[in-house]
Length: 565
Image 1: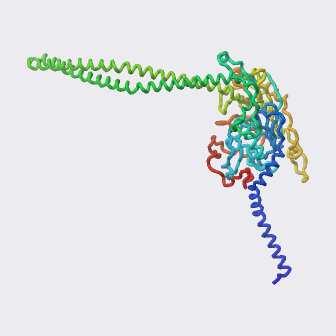
Image 2 (image 1 turned 120 degrees about the vertical axis):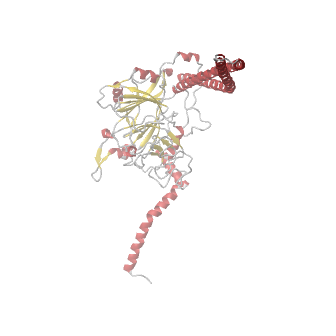
Image 3 (image 1 turned 90 degrees about the vertical axis):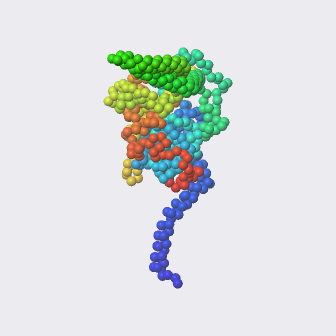
């Protein structure tokens, strides 16, 4: 039976409605299937590679900083000589914005999953806050779409992961900016090496400079050479550190031996001391018996009607008590003759062990200080708190008040980075980055609906070259800071390539703490989820380290059904 025309139309409408209802689920299934298809994933990675900049013709050095431009949605990596890599990114969406500010890489995991957002895969994760912001591979829809992280193309993220080190500075700016060569008398210079270096033989110098680590190589590759050949100054510092480490090791060995010697003497000395204490107890008991016998003799002898027999017995008891006292005295002196030298030897051994432990502690501190002189140092000057802070190796070193001229006036935010040694290690070359708020850089026009929008979201601006840092403003900021001489002396001892000086109107973020370098957020910019997230301790709280098993949503190509982390 054939249905009537109205009935056929009714069934047609129902069929269309059913199909429309099924399409989203079917489309989702197709997307998930395609995401796991190796050919589709490979094609996606090839497209991502074409979006990256070509590698430079010059050898690329160790990455010193990454600048993430929120307006242009891109990241640029710089070494001591300039830009080496660039790629598009996807930062935090509205309500979860990636806060503009200064960070550093504090943890790296090639395979990581988020406990904040449905166990989402975060391949080649490089964490910049413990509360959950990181650089990692992810989907790039062409606009901010994450929950605060900075997604990068998969191939780029893998390549970057292989060449970065913990501590690399990550600067998130509202609009792109490029570092500029910079010099200023206030910036620190390496302090001349002390007289102790004349006693140190510098490490042997290879005939020629080792080639830099190739891009895309892993840090644990067997045949990867070191990133650069250290200059003479760094070679000397390495020699000093090696000598101090050897001294610390020798001191530790001596302390162990001293403690072992004291431990060996202890039981024997304790036994001898116990024998002495027993002899003293016997002597004390004999003395008490003699005293009692003497009192009995005196009583018998002094009676009104003396009894010769009682007097004789008392006298005999007194003589026996005296003999026991004499015998106890001989035994006591013999016990002391054995115990006292052993006790003295034990006391000396313990004093030697105590001194060796003190020497071990001092040697370890000296070795740590010598090694620290090769590590970059970070200096932060806050106009808000009128303080200078110093951190090294993610640890606070010291802080002190600092004088800032016209402290009531804004100064801005600036990052000065020591790039490499010059003049045979007597000085360092610096760059400067100026951070300007989006309010100061934003320009508006009207879209087709007459709504205002920022031009920084235009495709043309995303491909535009970044503005150069404002050298005059960077110099003016340093002109306003008077560094305490103590700070100059202490910082100059450890200044080295990779070190940084940060000047800002801002105070330190609550994200600065255990296991971080300085974290500084620009208060005039959207803070996203960072303002409501609890800052967990490293390896704790919301994020978990590797070892908990693979996510059920894992894909070897960094794709997951959850596209929004």
